[in-house]
Length: 550
Picture (tube, rainbow, N blue to C red):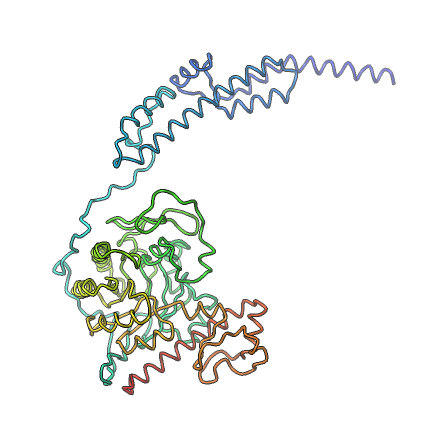
């Protein structure tokens, strides 16, 4: 036993002597191979007395290794700590100077800070031996923007070929109401993917799908035309994914007509912090970010130039640029039957001067969009978007200019008033100005009451997410009025949701139960019913027009 203890002591002493002998060799072999430029070594020699070859991160690793191995003298550790402090001070100085150069450069050309920038650049060069010139550009420069007079007139109609009927897209008027004062009409829009009977309600499939409703279910509910949003499809999954599937029709397995917008409406409405077009689901997905100082006329999420609009993705904050050309190119890859040119949507409360500039910009953008479309028609039709807010002079100018261009249809966009009555007054005046030989579309307004009000004014198609949105919140549309299906009075109501129309084969009590239990099926059945109701409403309106009742 004594012999074993003696042998253990000898072994530990030998191990200690071996570590003392090999430690300098190990430390030398573990020195980092990274080398700095001579100018940097000179600077470090002035600040620390010895040319430093390691970064602060590498010096920290060396210090930890030295303390872990042990048996090192306190003077060695102290020397290494001194080198680390000197290096950290140097790196902090470099970062501060570089950051100051960046911040000052952002103020150009609005502020005269060139002298301050030059001093900072000299200091940076003294520290590192390198130049930090942001005008020369280490980072990617933003493309130079052509300065354009905001009131510049758009291209003249004479620069376009005259409009001619398309073989792939045709509109026919079957009947115009003979009721005095009515402009209601029944028509048909022929597209490569089928016929659309007008007037027609167009539900919104924001992300290439109606919320909680499949394409097969939409077909069963007789959805003639579906609206999809280019903005959301650009954010995800992107044009290449949809294109590789063979276009939007194949991607979402829909064999009936589709219409896509330019993406501009969502960009500007989200930037202005207005309610989005698809309820709280999207709001919950938005990435919340700190406010910055780069505020534009559309808030803090996008900037507008003559070239187009640059915005941040609500999904991951990625920067996306949308131009008239790129918007059309994206819609070409999606392959919808009807596409919309890029336009600007100013906030409702803007000055007339700002609104007039916006109309002119939208006209220039739409002319560029039309040229891009005509270079590759791709069996698609393009509708113009009439702007001008509630200013009748601007609306008139917009209709006159856009009607002179070879668009296949006319859409009414922008703000139409602060309430329903103001909207109806504006449309009563505006609709007679639109060309009667082309279909028209009312953008974003198609709740039941509005549909019944605008059809007599001559509106052909209209889109809205309202019927499916209210369905997801438990409101069922019926011929007897709205049904708040979560109300207790429907708990034992085993009657059909609406006995006066074709709909889903479920009772009010069953829908009440599903909503109370938060069953996902509740959203599907309620949305389906409201789509059935809207299509029933439009069939009723078409019948009344044919009978000259409206």
